[in-house]
Length: 278
Image 1 (cartoon, rainbow, N blue to C red):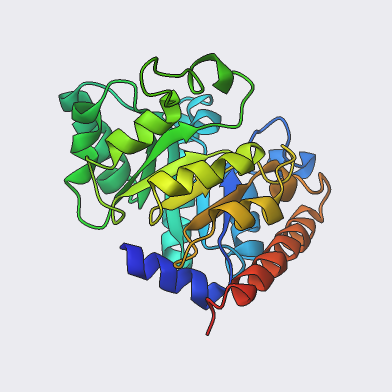
Image 2: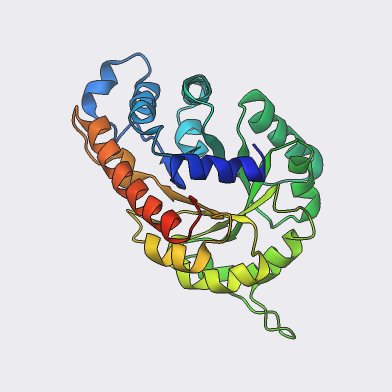
């Protein structure tokens, strides 16, 4: 899916909601544990209930890797189900990979070919050669960690370079702009850092931003839109726990849809307000 197709998808669905499939077998409704594959059955119900409201899904790989081979099977089944269910989904592997070139090439093959994701989250610390393999696949994306929402972000991301005074996350964004265009490069910016989006948009005015932290982590969608939306929307805003764990009963999918619809309706309002649905 290329840049224009992603924007068209957002306009069609009137939503830039990304739902994080952070599926923890310890948190899913108890009645699903009797199923052969409880994680997949949970994901399937969430997808059935929300696929028309979301522009993207983002499985966090840690929740699947933690279960060993069975977790990888659940992930593959989830990806296949989404692809067979609808063509109107942007699919992100939240894998946070990044290694020397030949290793990154294998990660790229894993998520773009074996699992058919549109994008994969990557870490910038090892530099260009760790990211370049992800650029070799047509209409696929890397999603670079830029400014994260966790407390430890302050340990490194805000450190200032002595001469220029630029913070590390700003230097990362500037350097990454030399690696890829807006058609392949997307950046992670936490919703709890919404005001920093003003500075980020000065550096990457056109790129899409993946914004976690809305919902359970307390980020404000209104603030994210105020500082981060551009002429092509330029946002995929993720909510995970606030949607998928809205209920731990047999009505979990119904409640998930209600929560997703609340966020989607707010997003539609902002898209209309910005004149992007005309």
